[in-house]
Length: 349
Image (cartoon, rainbow, N blue to C red):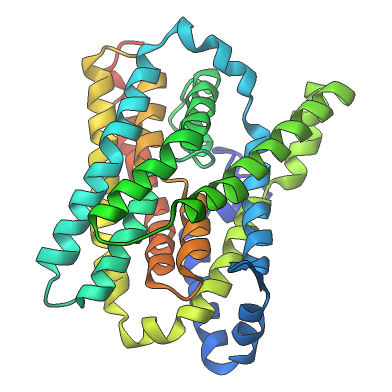
């Protein structure tokens, strides 16, 4: 099999991401169960309560994505702002709060007799971290699959990355406070600096240097492909480590994976349809509407996982909830891609 699927342009790892995630979950659980010395050793490698192995892997995940974002595209914001307004409203004024509401309803009401209160609080915190972080990487894949306007998608992603810098911390702080989970401001800011600002600056500097010294053709067709599977591999190794710490929790409560996944699936579908039908009502073209729906529906799960680990620890139920988000997102998003492609006739491009 070639590295990229000829029809979709998706790598082998991306195409079967859900299967890889499941395998890494199993591998991590087995390691934690039968080779406990490994997670014990990794747990000691930390500085200022931040796991050094996890920090390295998370940088490996995020850095290649940041190189793809052309922040110069932001200057084109005013050329066709309606799709951007929709994206910003859905991502920052609707999505975090519907995620909180749906997760609270399921964890505290519908699943009240299945999930202890302490675990419900932690699972809700994980859902909040996912809901406050709109996608910045895989959305390029979803946009490609729905024949989205690639230039416009770049602007949508670039502006989202800039908004994350100022909106993520206060939204998470507010919603976790409402759910009675205390998180110090400095811890949240440190997490954003470590896992957004640093890789973002590194990616932007690398991109600028390579474009200046080697040119755009070399950068896009030779340099970037070298990092083709780096993000996914970093994610999968992160999952192995996390699940090596989470093994006992999962073995004792395997049904919790499904209980966490259900509200996340409903939230993903809800946000997609809000954005997608909102775009239809605004008479936006399909190649803008589909990516708008995809950006809102999918999550920047790398950031959510990173912050969960930095704040609550690798073995926390909060980290587990963010990982379940990874597990359910890919198949749900592929289903939504299929829906978007079957409804192109609803839009007048």
